[in-house]
Length: 457
Image 1 (cartoon, rainbow, N blue to C red):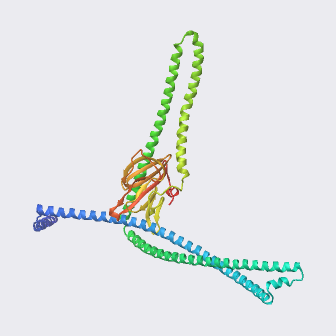
Image 2 (cartoon, rainbow, N blue to C red; image 1 turned 120 degrees about the horizontal axis):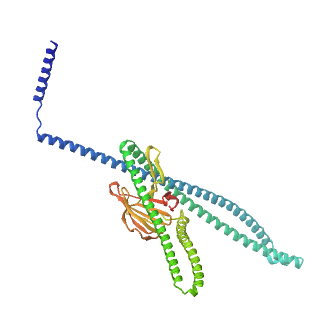
Image 3 (cartoon, one colour; image 1 turned 90 degrees about the vertical axis):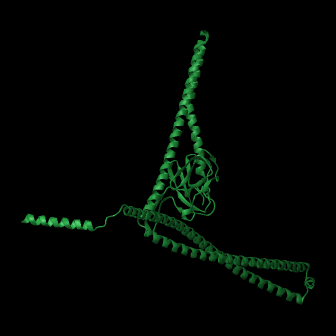
């Protein structure tokens, strides 16, 4: 009985399934193709949206770097204005104090002068100068009176000159104080304007930071890509430097082998000539050959060392010249610029996961800016790396400078360049409002150095 019930239920289930299948409309090939095209279109739209989000995140990060650099520049400018205003305050205070002291002195001087003139006039009213002298009881008294009159006249002239000079000095001090107040007012105006601009920069920075915090995976992807580009550039530079070192070592060994072979050939030639001489000269020739051999051995032993010393001396001279100019070299771009990414780890205090480890510095310049050599050297290599366009590496003895982000090249490998010579035009990103950034590095062979220690801002 149980088997019969199960059989009946199975038949009913199959019957229902057949009814559902029969009720479902059959799709044509045209419908299937249409559905596939729609799905492909949706995938493409999603891909474009992801690409746009990534590009927007990259622009926002670049904008944040530019705003951070601008805020730093504005803060430095504000600090400079404040320092200058304090100096002007001190200058004005000193001038005001000196003017007050001088006015007090000139007032005292005028009072003394006026009092002496009053006494002199009183005496002249009572008796003329000639009468005063003639009324003397003796020649000595007359001489004293005459000398007193002359000394008083000289004193009067001196005090008149002193009062005039002091008055002129006070006028000059007042003019200086007024000029300082005018400059101070202008500095205060500039300070207030810069403070207002800084407030705008901070507001825009806060907006960008808020937007970036919402990006999530897109932000991480952009940062990972940037770090990947940095590692790729580092790897290529390390490879080139290692290859140059290998070739230099091979050349050194080849030169040593050539010198040894040359010495051996000369030694063998000398020995052959000795055997062909007459028996009567054998003793003399043997002695001569021995001396020659000793000289040759000395030369062979010293030649490679001498060669190495010359090469080392030249390298030390070049690297020393480069090193002696540390902090004095010109900046690698001309015109207005801002360092938007410094050497080492760069992070933002408000976004914990925004962190980039930079092997050099990134310099944002004006569109159409050119990159220039910071020191005399030789173009060691020119190559391309994703994210950096053309890269030019200059060798300065054991030191190297790297210029990445060049669009149009003005030099080629092996070319000698001078400090300040144009290496090429810096690339401007049209998709990022023409943002123009040069990546600059300083190395001692493979060791990375902070470029800001070597160039003069």
